[in-house]
Image (cartoon, one colour):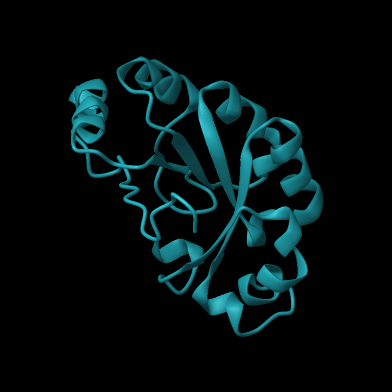
Length: 156
């Protein structure tokens, strides 16, 4: 690991005070974080509804720290470009939400962003399309792989 820390500090803005989101992002920058994560939820893949690309784009002016969008959404392919255009340098999708994961990952990279894939613990042990399998099968297309600690999307 030449010049790169083995540990990255990547806080989510989910617990931030939404009425002060720009200031909260600037505070994270001042604290020296490596990246800032936007946990994007659509109210369908998981029950919560969070950040759209316009909110993220509005916060981009408060920092130069890289943004990553963790898309916990149904049909992420329809939203990829919006989040890359909003200033997210990394886009993480859930394997469970992608019809053709390899195409989704290729699309993210074709847009100039880094691609990540996440999977929930409940599916990981059950199916060959699980996050564990994905790490091996799609490794050359993925910049990061995540295993969610919650058992399924509904409990996030």
